[in-house]
Length: 99
Image 1: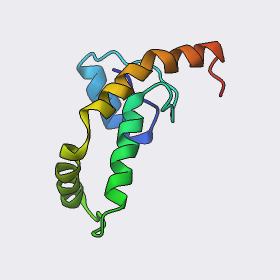
Image 2 (image 1 turned 90 degrees about the horizontal axis):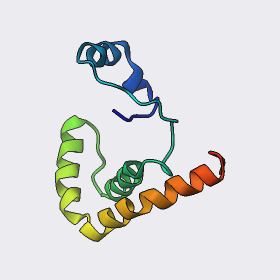
Image 3 (image 1 turned 90 degrees about the vertical axis):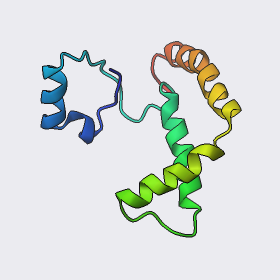
């Protein structure tokens, strides 16, 4: 499983659960949108949600907002993110991980 080192990924309960399920974890640098296009998708979703008149205040609001936003995401946007992965990784390797 690929994940960054965000605290919710490294919490003891999560670590224990994944170890019990024998899930292999890949070390991944935190805050790496250049390597993980899902971060770009989440930013895109957050940007749309943050423009809403009614702000998200709890888990129920988040679920509702995601139900409303997901149909607005253009399939071409997702394909563009997917197609960008090799170029992003190549640039990272070329720069030895630097920006």
